[in-house]
Length: 496
Image (cartoon, rainbow, N blue to C red):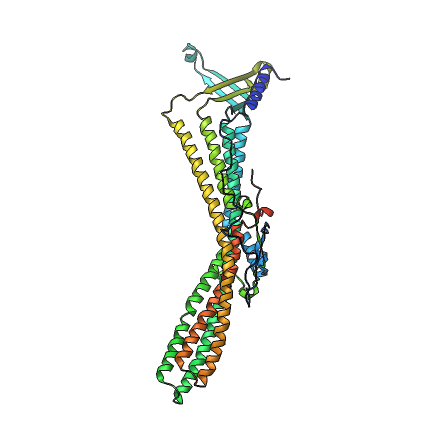
């Protein structure tokens, strides 16, 4: 049955726990953020314009809708989905973000074990010692040899009277949230990068095909020019001019092929592979489906959906908690400690009631003069909180800008592709007519050359306009937060 000393120790620790509920730090409040009724300056169109050909379908904006967690599947490209799934497994950035989250979680657990509970340690000791007689005031006495055995439990506890430890734990908890949102942001950014990079690759492949078709057409025109020159129907200057035009058109291919190679290298790195060992399938731009239904969440939901905003808010919470820590440092710190055990000079007598030993001690430390350091630390914590608050607000503003930019880009991308498609159709019709007229000698080469250049430019611009519709749609899904909150991909859910 416990003795009086044990009861005193238990009661003291219980009192410490009850006192630990008091905190002196400020209560956290989310910083003020804009609350607009819509993302764009003027009302958004319900549906974009459409155009003929791949990627020309109209897109409808569905307001107050949620972006799905796997938003990239809206493009209906199995190859694209496969690349993203592979990247989620192998990309080192994801692995690093997971490890950072684990570090934050374990750091919290380690500090919680120190702050919230008494520290108990079992100590066992055995000692054999010889003492000279001089130590007892008798130099002629024979040396004394004796043994000393001890067994005790040491207990210590820091009383969190003003909430310093709890404020520190609140900051560590906010760090867990921050790393969790950083992990979600890493998933979102990786998926968006793969989508845009793969679309860029598909666009480059199509541009290369178009460039080769143009070169083939110009070679055909050159053959006709040479025949006309042979029969005296045209001058040598016309042939040389066409040869020059053909050579200039061929100069377009190397930069496109270089960009294609570098894009595939980037894609290999994104999926966690080296270029020489990656097996990335070529994605045809015309096989990617442009999402016709575009979900757009409410502006009021953006601060809850963007992982970068939530991460910035976690830093505000952490800074707020540090004000509590700095404030508590100005106030008394109380430490309780004690031990309970046995001590004997013979091992078989170690746990005899007469060998019982115990101790209970308390200490109070009140800072008095530190050269203004503690006050400066508190002012620094307050300033750091203000900095984190303004950075959070700036993150929110940039997020609203990202969404507004993407929405308008989608609207105007559709108009641009429609205009480019009309330009291509007209240029193609004119080019076909002009080519036949040139073959018959109805028009001179200069007129054909002007038409030819217009058509070449229109075709390449059409492919680039088609690419923009895809990439800007992906950018909108990323700007809206990517739907990560529907289905957490990895790790524990954030605190708070």
